[in-house]
Image (cartoon, rainbow, N blue to C red; front, side, top):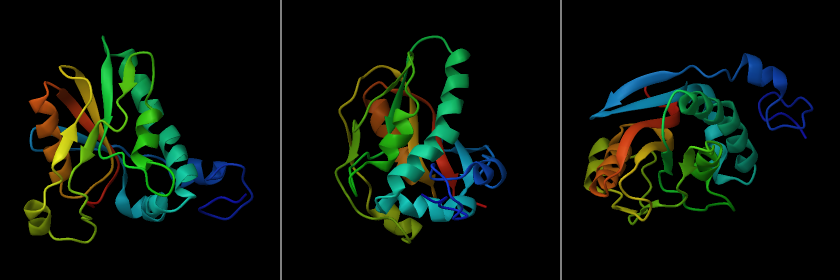
Length: 191
């Protein structure tokens, strides 16, 4: 196989050099409504990797990104946190044979962090890519939550653009007694 970034021979989706020199996470936090959203990359720095989510090779890419970001983050988080925390992925629908957000949440599984796979799904499957803020406001996701109620949770998605999707998700979770501690995303579109 070859590195997806530099095309060097590599068993992994990204070679060691690219992982250590090009795709080093740069954690940023921003406030969206009442929730802190932590992102590991700027969108522009991993855009080509994020676009693989609609292709079969995206499985390898997203799994590696999860290992580089979500896994170390949750490991440190649970060391400093008492009690269980649930990990809720936004809209874990299967496309191209896998659910890319599910790969992110699965990497966060520990003894005290529990992924709630496919528990927060959108009833409205509209595509927001390239759409205006007004379009997003006029066409909400209409999330349905079927996971564990009355728990603490971390909300996970791949990208944050306007934050509307995460706010809608948080609102639905709160209706089920879920206290969203914060949200994690791979990338933030805002430069």
